[in-house]
Image 1 (cartoon, rainbow, N blue to C red):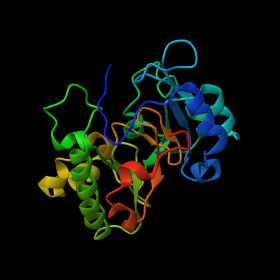
Image 2: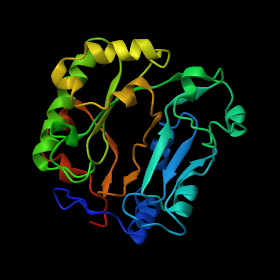
Image 3: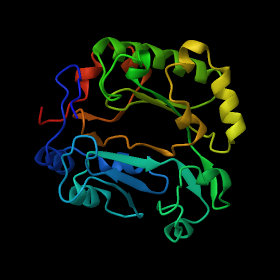
Image 4: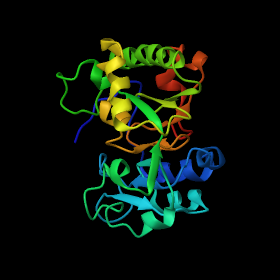
Amino acid sequence: MKYSFPAGMRPASLEERKQFYEREFRWRKAKRWIRSFVKVDTGRHSGIVKEGKPELIMLRPERDLRERLLHYLPEDVYYDRNTYRSLNACLHCKTFFGKIKNRYCWWVCPNAIGQELAFDVDPENASPDIRGSIYSFTEEEFEVARKTTIELVEWLKERFGTVVPVYSGRGFHVVVKGQDGLGLEERQALIDELPERLREMIDPWVTRGNIRLLRLPYSLHGLVSRVVTPLKKQDLEKTDLLTRFKPEYL
């Protein structure tokens, strides 16, 4: 599939992914974001894969995350936002490992005790009806996403303590710390409370918890060759974010 990206963005080759995880990956900082499990996408969007067919692979808890990523050379890396009573119980759960549809397990499973609250702001939401691929976007759409994220962060800071924006490579994630205990109805009420201009730019299924995975900060977004990076407020206010977080191979 062909994608259209601004600012010289392009898919990373296997050798470039290897170079990034050997030389640049800040694995100690990345591990601070990992709550339980990590999932890797070996190359479903670009078709660039180390071996076999592209697939999603759930990694069991490992001490050496960098070693595992160098083994798979993934296009994308995600962390599980859920918190669990027992990781061992998840390891033996057919639902969790996808043999049964598993996206909503945290709502009903007694082993899942909460989920990190997060918002996903994607540039394609600025004009969803005019593209050939949901992953393509323009610089103008990115600017809408950036300004929306600034507004969203300020709106959330009026209600919660620690709010962390993250550049996801294409758009932005906004993570709210300390709100794992919010249930489905409370999350939906929060979405409904958002001003319409903000609500239209987020992916509500991320906030509700339908999707429990989020890009791992400090990993490589291999489809666009950008490093997933937590931001400060002053970072969000800059207009050069599309070119600031390039890996060394560009």
